[in-house]
Length: 426
Image (cartoon, rainbow, N blue to C red; front, side):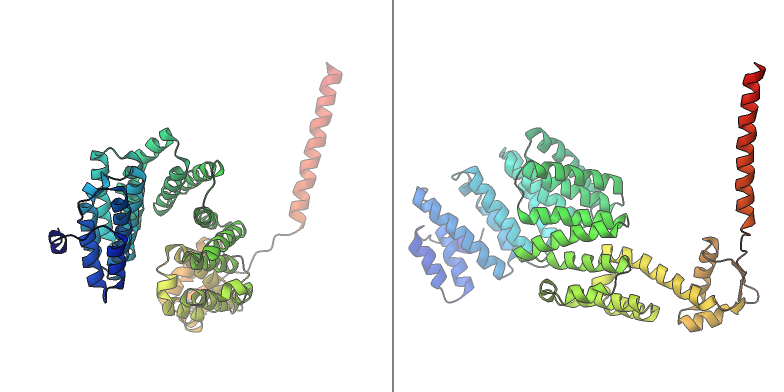
């Protein structure tokens, strides 16, 4: 327990809280508020003032990045929680957990804090709060890529919440499960969980931020299936929802919108979206990264593409969704460039192609062999001579398909005559 809490208390009055706000620095304010919480009085007014003191203390500790003190505060407040309604307890506990999340580099602390609170809520038989803390814990485990533990936790939680028919929490949990299955590359289950989330959401009022999250996940799954036009419309809906709430997720929605435009060969539209009123609000490295990719794609330049990937590594390579789609885009661009370069030749050195495309020779050789196997062009690699030999496309004579069609039609006529003759003979 904090040393400030062991010393004499201050009366739980609005004057004491005001005194904390007037203090010259944050540490003095924190000390005063701890003293207020020490007041043994449990009258209705004292409890109300203590709730205000907890809110203010949480804000001060968050600003000072004192995550460990926030964790200890939750433990110290357990006797106080016995005196107030369960709904207020839930609000305070979730508020303090949210405050810890605002302190950078506290993901492990948040996980251990949530696990502690789950144990306490289970012992206190506070089911409503426990389910919400468990959902938060599952989200943290997902962020930390602890997929197995998150999946085990969610499986039990979903059954329990379905039985209680808590639709709002069910939407949260189904969405989490969809994200988890997507991270595990299980697309059918990710889609099934998203459909379940939508079904639950249709039965109740869903806050705009929650609806935006559903649309964002829908867009991600459609993009994964290469249905970029539908994905774009979902990302646009999510962007509008997040933008109106000034939610930081708006920038991701905008980034994925621009990605969809590039993937459907409409890279020229990217500049227009960025310069729109909504786009200008979010100018920054994420938008610049997508603009650089769009420029490289418009110019069909692998060099610019690789420069963009190198300059904006955090925005492109470290975002798993963007990275996955840009990898396929890079492959497409590389194939188009190679096809254009080898077109005039019937035999060409691989080193010469590598020099023209400005890529390592072994990388080019590997890609050419893959393209031959995928029947992107007819040819063979002479590795002894280090050459690529391109065959002429053997054009199919137009008379052959016509001849086959005539033979098929004659066959049908013969079959028909045979059937008629069989009926006459009978």
